[in-house]
Length: 363
Image 1: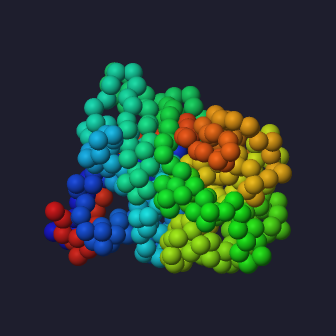
Image 2: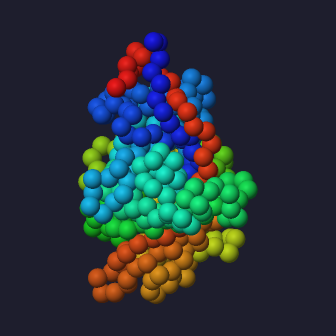
């Protein structure tokens, strides 16, 4: 045998897609696992021509699922971000878009039973410790993907997936404000360093001479901006207690600007070395929380709600995303409770992905 077959589902989750594996079908050792995922995705080529990746950071994501040993959760969701060209795998972050497909995939894999009508799954994001309740449509105890919900960045409509994120403030660094400040300055640029679902470094677009309404392609072509942003991101990461982040996709970087399309605020999200084509689910929670918190770099860009829950509509390159944030705003400052979004997912393929036996000979 020259190749090893690994069962998988291929799914779109939100505005991302990738393989969903049963964790039990993969090597336990992380170094070996990383080599398997690089081979499966085809990392190392801009088109991922020798794998199932799509040549973009939103199409080189991997979900690995297992029944949870946590007393609260039903499913453990282990995420990996595989680089497009560099042959690297980052196990530090999580992904909310790929999370949109976790409950459906867990049912399809037989990891949890479907209920009649709707099925609620309690999901533990093991990379960050976040707790998420996902609700999917399961009429007749079968996952349905057809529906009338549209999300910007995905053609057509599909069945809704309701996500409610719990205990996500400080989930990666241990603090809502990892530096202890509402604002910090790096290389002469003011930023807010915040950790809600995803640790982020957030700045105003005008601090870089940008409007915040540029296209993804326009931003990606602006390499002077990326060079300046990356220098700030690395210094901020160290100040957030994350060490040397030069080879890590976290913290992510975000920009805020005045809205133009009736939203609450305009936002751009970076992965971090390319611009996100739409908006990340985890990043949306951090950006929305930053927008709602007095004293951050968002001051003056929006009219803030005085108390939660509040809906923050983020304008992104392909439309808008609504984030429902529940919070308290009192003498102790902004206290994040939870965030809710509605996404969609769809099963695209099922079967086996093959990796060379020289990479891994199987279980």
